[in-house]
Length: 443
Image 1: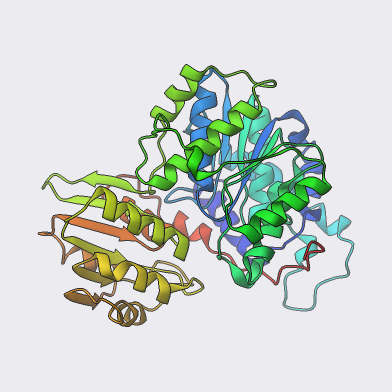
Image 2: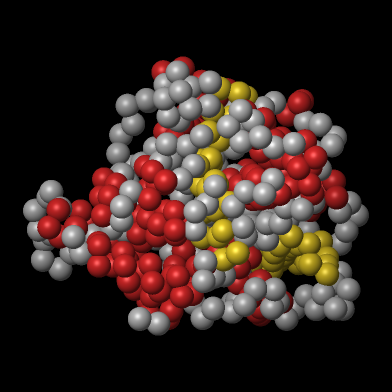
């Protein structure tokens, strides 16, 4: 098997969609020798800020001399971004090897599937692991092989029934709760909070920056039921010294969350204050308010804000950090997001807007995005383009450009600008579909 063939195999697992539940992941992990039992985790869930918080935690503990695994999703360009050790991407050779090994193990599912055979012409979800289940166990196996001292472990979708939830962590971290993925996680903040709070384990400490009263009430209730110590990080507790190089006031809150988590775990993993500061000062997380200066002097801000809460944070950052700038906006959004409100939120802070389709089966129509951007406080020019490359061809003389609305779009931009190696279509591995979320007894 070549690396290209391994990627193609992983792509084929999309046929099985995204199956909510832990049974398949537990089965595959058992066949792989229970690698999660040889590892320590910090499990991170939430609506926005998960990746940034994970990056900060990873940087702090790596600065402390630990060998740190990092599992995140989606990837911006290369599939290998999802599985890193000390910020080194998993090698193509290891992806191939692990894919071959787990492919053989996953064939056992046909013998172990509890349900009957699938109907003719349809995949049997119970007889095969999904893409995310497969990759979750791949990561566990790799981190165990690499003898990681700690793994920073980000949920994929939700938490309660997410494949990552087969682990018992040292701490459960919940960044915030906002409306996103409502069609799968629930149509209220309270329901979404119940899914995120599903990562809380008995007597395992919980740290959160959730501030919505209904969401926080769910987290508090779950923690109380699990006898899990809870620490809530309030905005007013932010210290001026918590200044990671990542732009945005919300990143200071993420930094406060990471620091609080480190303090909670001091009895298990001791980290000095100087090391915490060093870790925060050197954190790197591409595609999140990433400012790029091109050879021409043009500044481009890349931000993967992909829901209403995300673009509100982006707007605040633009108004605070780049006041008076003549901003050009290139916007692409997925159809299953609240793209109308996202457009209306960002339109007033731009003088020109170019809407583009995202390279995804779920892309919102660029024409509809443009129409939404014209509704309120419309900028001077709003134009729908056929592609990101077409839009970039129209902004060569603009001084300040913001590319946002989707991590998929940001990944495409990173490839075009040569800031990340082109991989020949690995961004398509981010595509997935999901069935309805099973009922949650918490609500």
